[in-house]
Image 1 (cartoon, rainbow over the protein chains, first blue to last red):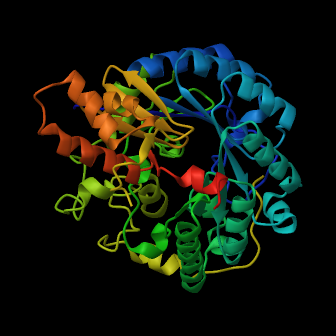
Image 2 (cartoon, each protein chain N blue to C red):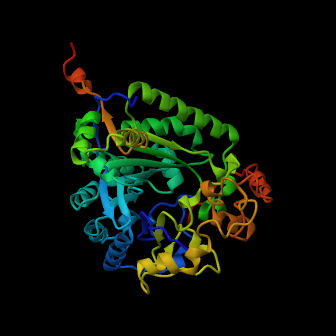
Image 3 (spheres, rainbow over the protein chains, first blue to last red):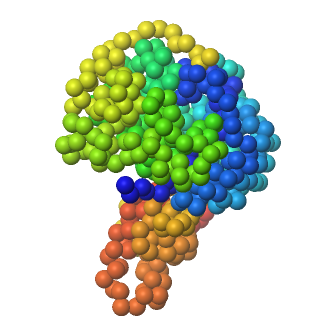
Amino acid sequence: MNVEAPLNLIAELTYRCPLQCPYCSNPLAFRERREALTAEDWGRVFEQASRLGVVHVGLTGGEPSTRTDLEEILEFAVAADLYPHLVTAGVPLDPERLRGLAARGLRSVQVSFQDAGAAGSDRIAGTRSFEQKLRISESTKALDLALTINCVLHRENLESVGEIIRLAEELGADRLELANTQYHGWALENRAALMPTREQLANASAVVRAAKARQSENGGGPKMLFVLPDYFSDRPKPCMGGWGKLAMVVDPTGRVLPCHEAGEIPGLEFWNVKERSVEDCWVSAPGMNAYRGTDWMPDPCRSCPEKEIDFGGCRCQAFRLLGDEGLTDPACALSPHHSEITNAREIRTDGFVPRR
Amino acid sequence: MTSDPKERLALPRHAALKHRHHGSVLVLPEHAIRLAGSGAEILALCDGERDRRAVHEALAARYPDTDELAVEVDRFLTEMIEMGGLEAVSPGTAAAVSEPK
């Protein structure tokens, strides 16, 4: 098989995070996992990934600033000629430390907010963190780094979308990701508590459209991303832009994965950068090749004209909901199992369980 | 919005051009765009001083006898602007702000 060079490395430096968001993408059993990579190990990964073709690295987690050697890790990324982007919850990072990271070559920061105001954001995060997020965002701008604000959307904050947009505008963000919850990991556990209504989504969508219209009249403002969740759009997402195609995830244990959740699928063999080269792990691991391209597809994907657009959707979602990651993502209306989605989107309960 | 030939062209502030064995890539904070052919060379000419015509002239000086490429270069520039990989600064915008008469 002809394997493309990846462009983007998602470096999950740790599972640790002071927040307890109910949609956390950490694996449910993350406390049983050992973080295995030292800063030097990450340096080797960056260098090999760059040679393989990677140009951009997202330093993420968990919360990357829980690592006391983040500075050293960043220096390795810069030395490997990767464009370094930090994905942070804003804590325990502080402005002084951020200044040091900028001096070492950090280019861009994504700060997550959980809602537009302190009360909502801190409640969803399970930790007082909103004020600190504001400070980190302001420092990011003051240091002339690119600022992305990210807010995961669900039933409890979808109605704040207008205020979230205003917050991003006030902070001078370059980009605002209004990211509807994807139901993996803890989010799947909390699915009924997070599930929005169609009306909420339609209203939020209209608010975003109006804000974009306002922007194009006045000029400027953050570039906004809002995509209807796959549960409500009848077509699956082109997950990761294709399995093992554009983006490479290295998890805190050192495994090379096609996405942050694929390592949870039993029976798929992924390889570890502690034992093999990054190129080997990317090109030759059986798990990486299991769902590359389109040859693996069953119908309805196999004969679908959109198979190169959505790549059959998300393998992890097919595994979680159907027990077989080789099936068409049930988010697709053409899937014979689409009722798994249409039923779930009608079930709502109150009160989510924080990530433990 | 992208047709004004007097617009000066520049890479977005937080963009970077990277070169790898598989080709060149324009890297943005959360996005990377593979550049085919001479894309990187064209973008490198977009230095905030040149407008479209100056970009064409610079290319013509390097590659004489390639008049027919102008259309393709134009299309590439427009596409990059639409994808957020290139910014077009209208002449006079800054002046209009600093000299309101």
